[in-house]
Length: 310
Image 1 (cartoon, rainbow, N blue to C red):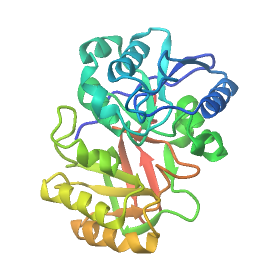
Image 2 (image 1 turned 135 degrees about the vertical axis):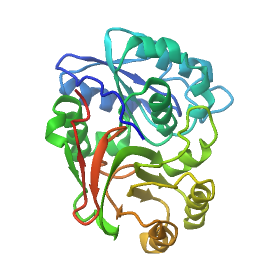
Image 3 (image 1 turned 30 degrees about the horizontal axis):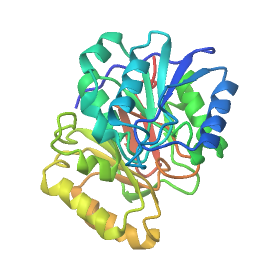
């Protein structure tokens, strides 16, 4: 795997666009998130269709075309320095192929932040734009607006990335499922999106040479087993250098899920760190994707060779 282009860090007063590429957004959470961004001396703008709800498919924030237009127009707006996802849900796979990647590439690098369903966008931005992106909290997500640690980690990454060049697992997390150290380029996101994205035009062909970060929400243990098995059978995990496991919210008791992770990942012969603290959890860490780093499963740390942003 190769490292990608790092966008520029944000400066006070920077304009950031909030988009909803997936599900509909709760108004009160949106306003709370905007207030946090304004408190960081940012100038957040809400794209035109963020508050939409599809008339027939209520799990979508408006039509596919409108969600794609919001993202593309925000990215191509020269006054916008970063694009932040308001939430996850479902819908990116329906709109990602409507984006004009040539036009977006011509604009140059910008900061992109999101997680969960936007895992598909992280992969597309890497494949089509060659950009480092930030696997970080949603601007209108409950886990962000109610948690100071999540807010501080994202703020530091955006404004002072040197201060979070060494990322430590959340307190009481970061145990070694498989001990050891590994170096590679970070990639990954939500496990169910990684598996459903296999074979599409924007998905990586595999994790060879990479540090794979995976997490999920609302999936039973047998389904996580099935997804990990699919990644193995497809050869996607061949040559992976190391693995960091994030949160498994609403996936059943962790003592039930842990044997699945041991069974499916323990035999790969690479370091695996568990409960690192990114994804669908309180105080979720912001993790850059597309950067070279060292994973120390014993210490519970991910140390970037360079700051996530220039």
